[in-house]
Amino acid sequence: MSRPRISEAEWEVMEILWKQAPATAAEIIVGLTHTSWAPTTIRTMLARLVDKKIIAMRKQEGGISFRPLVDREQCVQWEGDSFLERVFGGATNPLLMHFVKRAKLTPKEVRELQKILSEKGKA
Image 1 (cartoon, rainbow, N blue to C red):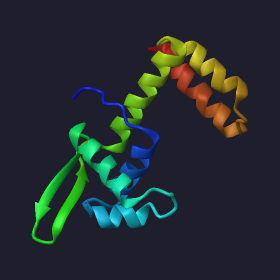
Image 2: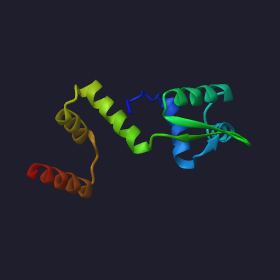
Image 3: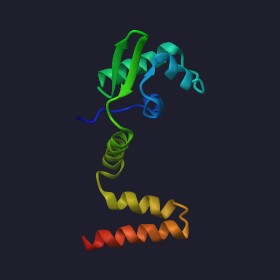
Image 4: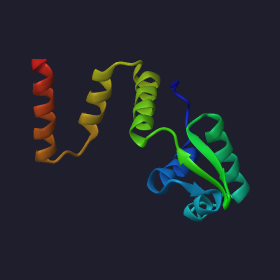
């Protein structure tokens, strides 16, 4: 599958579907009451996600339900790859250095990173 771009707003819709799929548009609208989006806006986002083949729409007796076609981990990978390419030209080292230098890491997290890097160095 190609890597469709998911907007920040669409991510919010997807978070609901990843947690409680299948869901109707009405259930998704209720799940997004913390936003100021109109129901028509949410329905437009659902239509766009269907067009992008990120979610599927199923007509049934009680109405229409939606379910994700792509799991959250896959979308996180796509977004991470896109960010790495856009911001760091695809280079992993500058990305890691940027975040490690700025992160407030616990001693346990430092040990975990050291272990991962040590294992990578052996490969």
